[in-house]
Image (cartoon, rainbow, N blue to C red; front, side):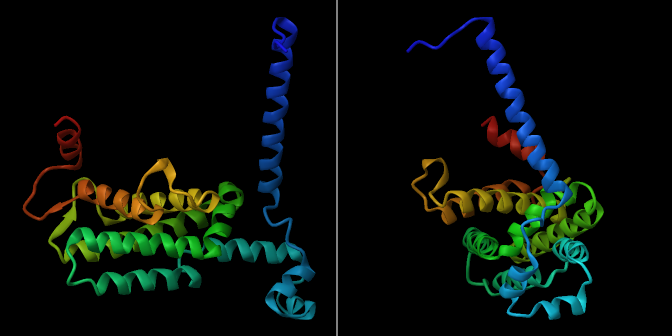
Length: 239
């Protein structure tokens, strides 16, 4: 059947779009007000293997618990993330027999694996999208700064052993921020659809490692190389 056209149909399409946008806005508004609304005391205690009495030893209300949970997820030195970064740091310290490409690929694959396996990253992303924009913005910014610094130091330690350094004007913190954004974005996509993105013949984790290696090949340089990041990018794209 042919689709109706004309002023009435255009008005219908406009109103439909407005209602869908309003629904999306309300979903975000409610999530911002309380991203933990789905948490219920009894289910929470069952998950922890504790009684409700144990809960009230620490918190008088669920609202107090929500606040502490958000703070727990926005701390830069959160124990769950510390353990992941410790594993990556150990890996970076035990790769002496590999060339730079292999060392970076090994680190990148493990980085993505740890992010996908650790549910705390999912919870932190939820806070970032909700209370991270309002109540915990400063805490989350500090947490990300710590994570970016740690990421940069781990990859930097692996590359420094191979006489590579950041290309100006970047430093390892800046490179860490780029790599952290890349792994979080790729990890989110992987959790939604574990199939390889972009119809690549490479397995997903190999594809991610290739992307990280490409980024670091441009954003770092041999110590004797004096080309800046912009000069390197222009040279590659205009070759």
